[in-house]
Length: 114
Image (cartoon, rainbow, N blue to C red; front, side, top):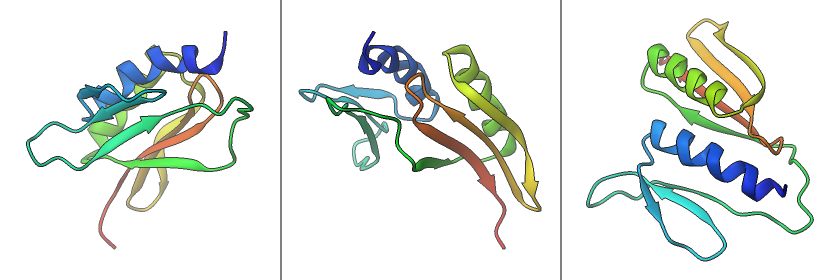
């Protein structure tokens, strides 16, 4: 199975849980936008034919620690790999780290103002 196929089901569940609730038809992309008339936020996924998991991490901010916990459960249920947390990593920083089914790294965190 190509990574794109494995990631489609993963992101179709994860992205709405993160607030990207509107699927948008874009050729060659899996794309979701945040709801609202003036929403500018979107998350898009496409695959390179020579795809290998990248060395960066996409971090998404959560409103609360409870949101981090909720997203961690959703990620686990849809096949996240190598999950770490959720837990406090330092004072005021609560996060969960995981990989999508293709090995791309993500983080969902809640940070208190410094």
